[in-house]
Every structure is written in C-alpha cells, then in structure tokens.
Image 1 (spheres, rainbow, N blue to C red):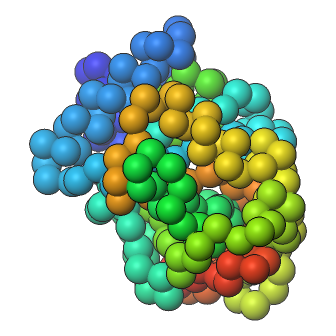
Image 2 (image 1 turned 120 degrees about the horizontal axis):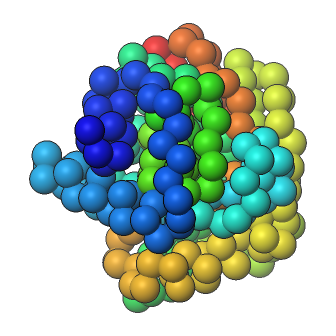
Image 3 (image 1 turned 120 degrees about the vertical axis):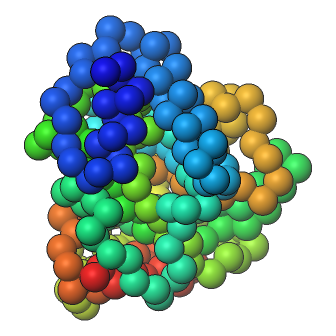
Length: 231
Ligand code: OOG
Ligand code: MG
C-alpha cells in the first residue's frame, strides 16, 4: 500500500502502523495533502490550521525540533464542555492550546482550547517527515469562548487540569515567545488563511495521556477555559 493508504487506514481503523520513514519534508506535506483530499472527498470540511512543535516542551517530548503545520476539519471539532469517545483513537494525548479566529487574513478573536493528538504510528514515535505526513498527529479539538484580543496574550499562564488536578503548567510565552508569531508563521506556510478558520498556535506544555472517564480543562489566564470529558 502507499503511505497515503497506510495512514488513512490507521486513521479510519484506529490502529497504529509502523513508521513510514519518509525521506523529506516536501514529500511529507504531499502525503498530508492527499490524506486531507480523501477526507474532504468523504464529506469532511476544512475548518482551519494547526501548528505543531512551536514550544520547547513539545519539541522535547517528541524529539522533533521544527515547527510543523496540519489541517483541522469540522469532523474533528468537539463542543466545549462536551464529551468525546476515545474509541476512534489509538493512544490519545491531550494538550492546552491557544486558538485564533481568522478574519481578513488576521486574528479576529482568541480562545482557550484543547487539542487531542493521536499519532497513527506505533508507540507515538516518528521522524519529522513522518509526523507531517500524519497531519501532525491532529485528532480532535475543543474551542472555549472567543474574546477580543486581550492587551496581554504573549505572557499569560496556561494550565492543564485532569479531574480537577493541575497536571501541566506553562505560559503562552513558550509558544515562539508569542503565540501570534505562530499565527504569522502558519500564514506564511499555508499562503492564505480563510475567513472563519480556527487556528491552533501549538501547545505551550507537553501533552498528557487521555483516558476514558477523565474530565480535562485548559485554562488560559484572562481568556477562561475549554473543557471536555473523555468517554
Ligand atoms: C505532534 C503534534 C504537535 C503541538 O501542539 O505542538 C502539536 C505530536 O506531539 O505528536 O500538536
Ligand atoms: Mg497541538
């Protein structure tokens, strides 16, 4: 099977595959684009962009040290405060994010967010090209309440709570020094950001494993929180 077919089968069947060991980043983005095309063909709608590995905590966790970008679709969105079945994932992890809403190619609003990532590779292990091909491990996302851009977004606290206990602590400063920098880099990488798209700037902290029954909340100081229950 081709890399595209392998990754698509892993995604649809929630079953890990061995690493592909793709040779270069350009090929990887081509595989990523073909996978997205298959999903659009099946009825999903493009809903935005996610950045990955924009913080040192994330780079260290997965051993890859370059900023990457993937796609978000409507099918991946879970309502804030809602529940998500883990049956559709392989070995899900969850992380706190800052989301931007796109209007006229610029940031129209900001929200606290959660991202569920789920590498389609065995043991959550991959090279830079392999994780890019796998849509940067993107699996699902939750967007909290939108706010107008606050006066301070470049150095505010970020907490990840599981069942009421704080499990990760960080700052938006960990995201390239300012999450708006992730937005600018993403805009350059994608070429054009469409009105209404959601833009995930990348996690400020490492991700934690997500298990059934847990209630997870991301709190971004000044912006409120986004939450989800795993079922
Ligand atoms: C890669 C995806 C990284 C982030 O926020 O940095 C990412 C992974 O950790 O598997 O989503
Ligand atoms: Mg992320």
